[in-house]
Length: 130
Image (tube, rainbow, N blue to C red):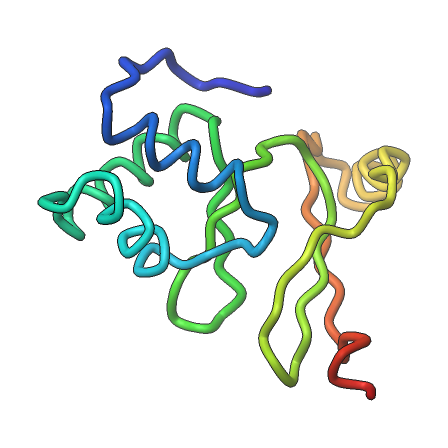
């Protein structure tokens, strides 16, 4: 885990982190908010957004924006690839080892220092193909 800074783990942060780590669906903040309200009924949407931002900055979770106008969140902060279905919008992790040699190839091409890369695949999921 690549933590950028240490954070105090409040009740709300811990709940949000647990919600994200218990799903593979890469949910939106609204979905996380609805789940959080089951445990803390008076939690506000603003609190959820603030804590998501803090957890992202601390390197505990990933924020993904696929140009849809809203972010999705991933409880797995390690570098990994994603697939998004263009029909149903489902996102899922791609169980494939990251290809670190891509960093070196791009470094040589750009004459830059590549620290990390993110790769998304787009297409039609198995359910939508049926």
